[in-house]
Image 1 (cartoon, rainbow, N blue to C red):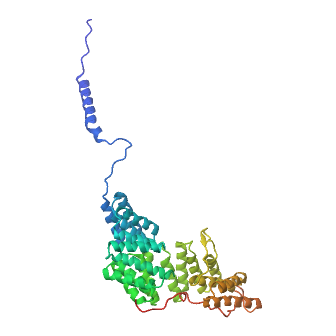
Image 2 (image 1 turned 90 degrees about the vertical axis):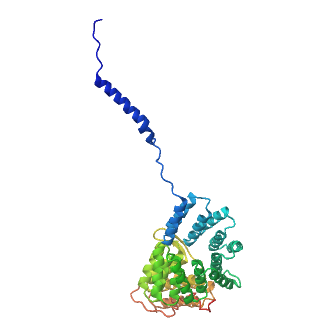
Image 3 (image 1 turned 180 degrees about the horizontal axis):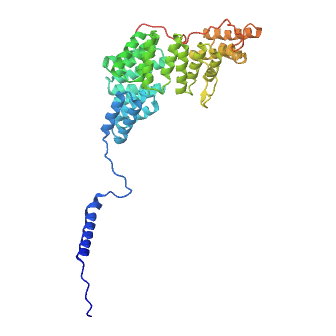
Length: 429
């Protein structure tokens, strides 16, 4: 009972009070400011307008893929803005994404059925899918909504020109294309689409100098559209201004590297001036860009043949004519015989086979040409040449390519790469 009580330590009391204070501070200040564990930190939300502005800049710079992606983000951010769908559709058409463009245009029309620009783009997308009746109806509706829609006239002119090129137009289709291109320029001569459409119609009618001037004007308005440089290069080539043609094709290639057409046109241009080594290099690049395209293989085989590399010409020409599987495992569908460049692939394939002594391949091709394109005198004459070469081989008068002694056979009537299908110039429409 007389045991003394232990006195409380002041230091212990101070520490307890301090710990309580720290606990209150953490509970009241730190915890509320700390985000919950395993919950994503919120980020600032971009405005839909910022995506559209970014897309416009990408398009101006010629970065088509990035521009399309930015407009797609704008659409996702603001799905009720019809104008974003319209701009997206326009870029998708320039990028060759016609089915996607049709969807975008129709989405814009769901939001605003009376949007003339969307109807015009819908018609343009349909025309590239060769649904000409539906395209014409869309253009008609676009012009009913806005009779001064220059772009609608321009797209319509392109569609009509396309029908003429594909031999599916009616009597008067070319005149309609001419009138539509004139209307587009009359309404808005400063619109790129107006200049482009007018150039396409002039090129179709063989007025290459005037067409080149229109495409030059279009490029001044929009210098970073690969398709315009490609078109300008084609017309320079027809005007035999080969250096400027190659320059424009190279610009198109830089703006759209995956497209095989610039390399193809460069190859044909070099072949026209006899530089077959360079032609082969660019034709090989075009094949890499589009390994499943039989036209690219036909073009490569043509360049080998022109360079008198007949053995090397056989495989690509066979892929173009008969189809098959490439060394990389890509399947190629052969081209059914038709007049024009396809017939050229056939007779070059037959001639290459004959010159290398493979008459079992050459003679059936000769027969196919005589029966399939009897009105193409060049093809028929070259079919006769195959028969003559094989007869000379059988008679011992000609040693096939690759043998120890090679003699030049008579009767090879092949033409220059650009002699097939080149239209004559006509008065300016």
